[in-house]
Length: 391
Length: 243
Image 1 (cartoon, each protein chain N blue to C red):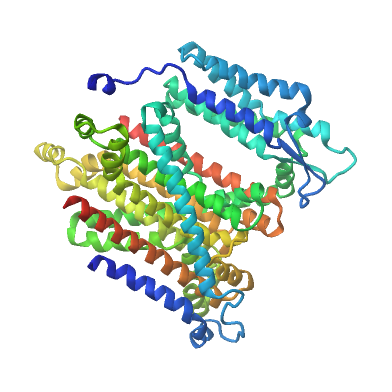
Image 2: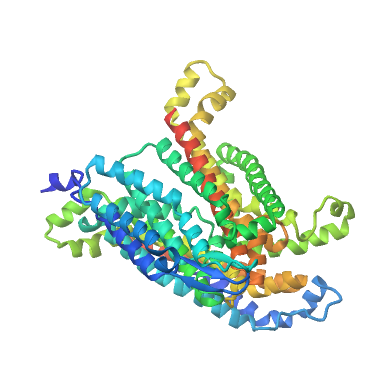
């Protein structure tokens, strides 16, 4: 009996994809696929799958889900390959559903009318993505394969979004109204979060090396950086306003540099403070975990301490350090969005402006790129870490 | 008993400060000279504190319940198929910034406490779920075998062996989740929830540093008090199970 339970369970049927397909059927049945809004503030009327896309679209979506459901009943390699291809194509062309909705339901004479994306569309996209994730997992797809699938889907959405038929999508309307601001926000967002990560990486490296050399400094330093991590972002941003404001009042030349109580300066400071904990902890752990025997071997080869650090310890510690950079970058991208509240700019500006004006698509224009940036940073740095580990 | 000293002091000073901040006008007139509006008055700080704590508590309770049951479900034989997907959701989900989850809840549910609570529950689930999985999967299989060998049923193994052993890791997950949620709930005041973020937001909008400070100090203190409370619970737990 124990022998059998420790062996990997041969999967008989894949209930996961089937459960997700059923959930997707329920979602498209119950939730609105899209919303037709007379202008950007009014919430508008929702349309379900059938009302939006007629027999053709409804038939396509339902037969897709049924086909996936049936194919997934037996976990044969070939069947899962078909399912993966079908799901990828479906995800790539999903925005076309909204285009059909625009063509059928959008009043032609009104220049302000727009299509909002409904909960049904989002849940369908999300559940299809989960099914694809599970299928790729079952196929034991390589990282490169997974990444190219994601890129294919992104490219598909990009192509759909640039078509004339989707220009009435509210999200695209908001974007084309402020495409300059959008790229400015992207620049600010990236430079703030990546700048904070770069500065804190250098600081953290120095701190970690100090902690390795002097064991006594470990507790107070780790205590300090984890104390800062505990303070909620809004509070830390707020607490930095008064001292920085006082500083720039006292030294006017700081104002000419743009250092004030609000703006990028307190944001950058707070972001650095938050980035320190994951960075210091990972760098310290990575440097400490290099096995003593490897270091001894280096010494035996006649390396001096500096060579050992550069050629032995650092390369071995690199994957764990990169993991620290990954966590920090993701966190910094999210916190930069909050920093818009103190006037730092970035995508958070759209989020909070949109919330203030009750313009939901402006909120989306800020929130979706933030999520996308975080996911992209995660993918890139995970790939980097994987590459370093497998060296 | 010494471990409880820090949280008690912090909680006491949080409550006292929330009650006494309105009487500290001299200090705030130094921060914001030449202004008549020195103290945030739309709600009392105690009300805001209470509603902030309430939001975090409710979301932590729901989040723990859902995450731990989901974690148990996918580690049982009948739910094991779902394990890879669920653990992937838990790790990919944590990549999404909490403020984005908060913002995305508004188009779905409108403004107010409801979308805030929804976002807090959804986001707070993930660290608890991840730690539940790590805790349950990290148990030495030999321990489970010997528990079965002693004649325990699978429910008994779960309740008397697995959950107590995984408890510390799960508790650490709840701690992470609550820390994030205190911060996210503060931002929740931008979508209409009544929290300690209100004075900060009002101060930022009106350019009143005194309001900002009042909110920020209380939020910071709340976070520190909660964190030290968890620290004390974790230490007590560790002592109870190592003895």
